[in-house]
Image 1 (cartoon, rainbow, N blue to C red):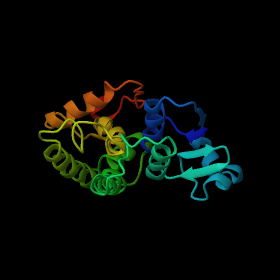
Image 2: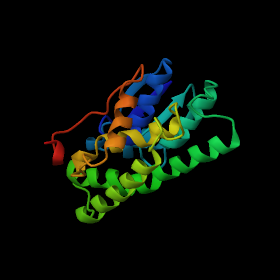
Image 3: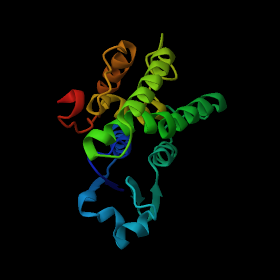
Image 4: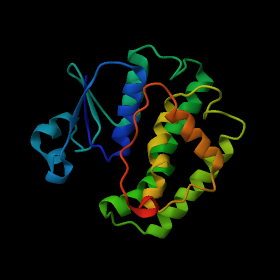
Length: 203
């Protein structure tokens, strides 16, 4: 399997992290986004949207980080990460939607402002980040992970942008339950970190 990624992309990191936690063989292929490689014709054949990550599993090409997480869990029969139980699966889907919604438009967007110079209103996206962090803090009350005692792909989908939220001037200090959850993910066998930049509150 080849993972086309960028080391500063949290969407890419989700998949990189999950592949490492699964302990399966894979090859990382860095896409030089600064040089526009993600918009080059060759890459657009893999993903017409011109976005990372993209997983090429011996010709089966999957884009979108959430879709790749689901694919990998199913491919390797890892029902510990993606249970077959309908209620648990629905709860995971909710968190995948949160990752694509509130996380993307909160801590992810705030970080895009500082790391990549994105044209968002910083105060607005930082406020969104705190709203979702408050909700995640409440959801984790009394739980080790989002669904209970064990991690699932829901935790992987949320980890990267929350872990690096301070780069976007989002202070995670008030969210002690969230910070403990981050530490539990970081203690998992096979964990690989999301590259940090000295910017924002992380400077």
